[in-house]
Length: 161
View 1 (cartoon, rainbow, N blue to C red):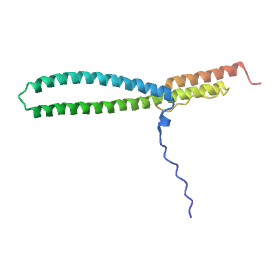
View 2 (tube, one colour):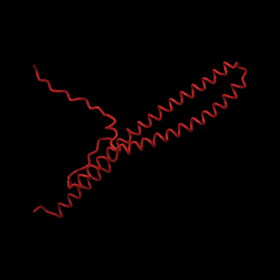
View 3 (cartoon, rainbow, N blue to C red):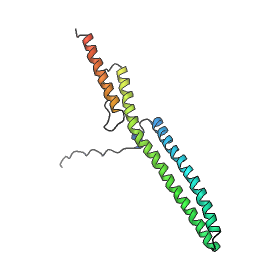
View 4 (cartoon, helix red, strand yellow):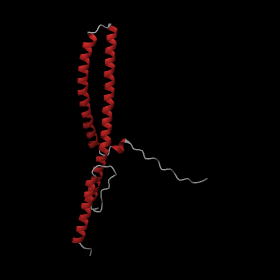
């Protein structure tokens, strides 16, 4: 029997991986989706009030049968239900995007905190290494440059004995 190397399982992200800092990320997603809810509610109120009033004028004053008028009102209600469904999907997408977008910031902040903690423990050679695409790349580079400069200055003032 031939020994074959075991395949490494494919990397799968779970929500736990995306929620690096749940408090920050969910608050971010809440404000983003909350803004979406307010926007959708405002549009719904304006749309419904204008359409409903215009429908009342056009349908009720037209020489149609009551069945035709009822059919038009049913179609209006179907439009409203479809718009509500689309708005719900929109808000869910906004929430999901809020979590995804905040992931890049939360991941960077997590790495900053981790390196700060390690440096506080005396491991002054630690540096911040962010993933490509993470936010705060310039701040990480500036911090790493500052730590290198401090190390160089400390080396000049305290020569090895």
